[in-house]
Length: 147
Image (cartoon, rainbow, N blue to C red; front, side):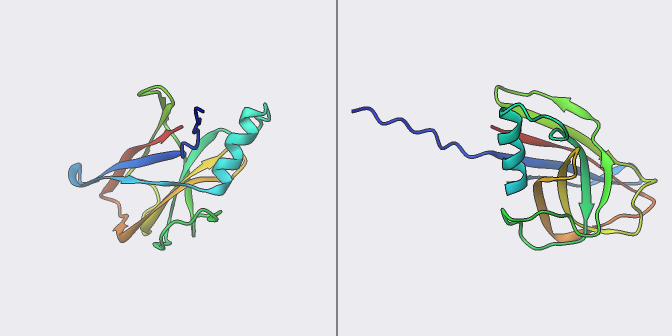
């Protein structure tokens, strides 16, 4: 008997670069967690319920606790639109984003999150140490989701 197995997890990674006065000071690629809200959005998209389900924003927040599947918010979030999408390989979407020097100054960024158009948290990643966002700091990156 042939046993079929199809329990491929939804996974992804967050890649970002931090610049101070235009000079690269930090670079990282970290695995992320697609939270329950994101999984629910995918299920509804497959069923044709598309209104408000697409990822269109990135959020920056102040909570450094490890991500959990039940997470539904980014703490003290600052939200901005994503820059666009690419498709690097079959079953993958890359969400491009940036945070310019003119925005979100004064925050100690400890977490990142992807939000859908209806405000649902799709994926979350936390840091162990903050990025102190100031007028000379910019951040750019992409978030890749693999289905």
